[in-house]
Image (cartoon, rainbow, N blue to C red; front, side):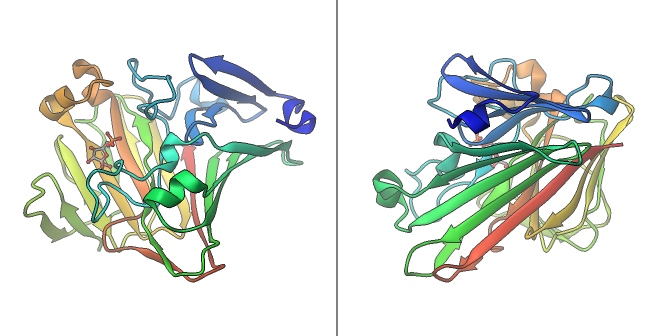
Amino acid sequence: MSVKVASVSGVSFDKKEALSIITVENNFATAQITPYGASVLSFIPKCSGGSDLLWVSPTAVFNGKKPVRGGIPICWPWFGQHPNHSELPAHGFVRNLVWNLDDVQNLTSGATELVLSVKSNAKTLEIWPYSFHLSLTITIGKMLSLCLTTTNLSDQEMVLTEAFHSYFKVSDAREVAVSGFKNSLQVDTLNRSSPSKCLQTDQLIFSPPIDSVFLNHSADVVINDAGLLRDICIVGKEGSMSSVVWNPGSEIVKGFADIPNEQWASFLCVESGNVFSDVIRLKPRETHRLKIRLQMV
Ligand code: TA6
């Protein structure tokens, strides 16, 4: 870490078990990020009265051997199972890599910006044969902004899927109203052998479990949480044509060692990216940006 990066006011560095944790505190919010997977683990806007927008499981592991369950893991360069090689890690491999912290700075607006990056190496080339550079710019202000920039450094076309796999803290996943899906194509993947498809209206009607992909979807999403008296809004997306809504419900949760059974209703994943048939194709030297902004109102 450079001296410049290590000495920005409001930014401190710590460890939780095997993971480095970066804490940012400014006039707008407090946030925590781990370079392991470049995952944002906490975002507490000042206006939230101390309540986190993000959820991290109380039994999440911080051993650097598997992704932290919660926050905003990054799925890249494939979402879910690898299309042809089921032995490869689900949701790609960058959530299992330690990213480099390239830059931290306080902007004139008072927000704090961090840039983390990872690039291909001999190990990544063994499982995904493309040279790449991937960077994540995280801006902590009144909103939390994330911009994931993929650059194809190989000499072939690169085809990828990706997502910000955001875990939001909710009062009760059975009670929240989620809207913003009008005219998207919902693919219900709970029955994986024959996923059902339907055209969605604005408001999603569901009762957990839910594991659905919304294709042709770039609109803002609002999670209205009457229990916590707040809306979580995913706004101003760029470079994202799909969303995913996931909650395991009371039975499927039993298959997750790092989620206590009784905690299943405390979170809802609403993910933004490009998944399933919404692939990103990048010619050599081309770049793609996936951006989201999260705010509480
Ligand atoms: O985004 C939904 C999903 O793909 C689900 O199918 C579910 O299993 C979840 O992500 C968690 O995946 P993970 O690999 O982090 O256990």
